[in-house]
Amino acid sequence: MLSVWSGKNGCVVSCNECYVDLSCSYVSFVVHSLYFQGSYSVTLNGESIISSDDSNFIVKDYPFTAKQQPQLKTIYIVRHAEKGTYCSSGTCIEGLSNKGNERANQLANWMMNNGIVDDITHVFATHKQRTYLTVLPVAKMASVDVQRFPSGDEVEKLEEEASICPTVQAIKSTPLGSTIIMSTHRSAIYGILSNGYNDEEDGCTGLGLDTSNSTNFPKDDEGKLDSGYSDLWKITIDASGKPSLEGRLILDFDLG
Image (tube, rainbow, N blue to C red; front, side, top):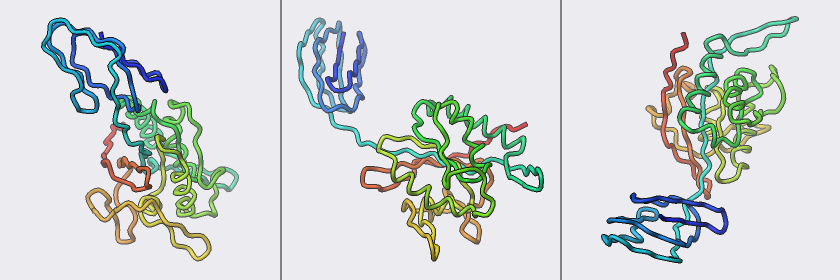
């Protein structure tokens, strides 16, 4: 039996008669007891620390140091789902159509089935209702409130691009280790990821990701997202603020 304890975070890993790969990202551990029958190998972050072919071997209080794993911010970005316009008393709001609502629900289920929901710490949307409704199901699953940038309900007088700068600032303000799911607009996504927003009164720089690859970042003649509603990008940001593309997925859900 292998028992590993971290004094700081209480990580416990136990195994009997098996190959053990300790993946806990803590600074130091002490193996208090080790007992295996037959051959075994114990590795830490890919490096073998103990191995033997002895039939019985006991190690007590075996100290070793773990390599600290780098902390990252992880961001999942989607365009809002299919929109539908709803009018009441002369006021119209662009929410989601029936297909859009179905896509939002299937997105949440996909994130749950892929083990992402439990990691989510922040859910971001824009001032437009259609982005809020797109991430609302996953926010409920994760028990996290949706934060809107700019804040408040639908503000028709503000353009979609008005969400770029406050969203960039919110992403930069989240601590390392955060996992964010956010919904935005085809006219705002590349401004957030890459070059920000140039405006005489209120401009900002983006996250600085290289979005020149047309396969990963399809664009129309105006530089806006040139695809439908199925794209999901996974971006990570390291401690220095450098963003990296981890992948782009096409979530081709059956919307009925």
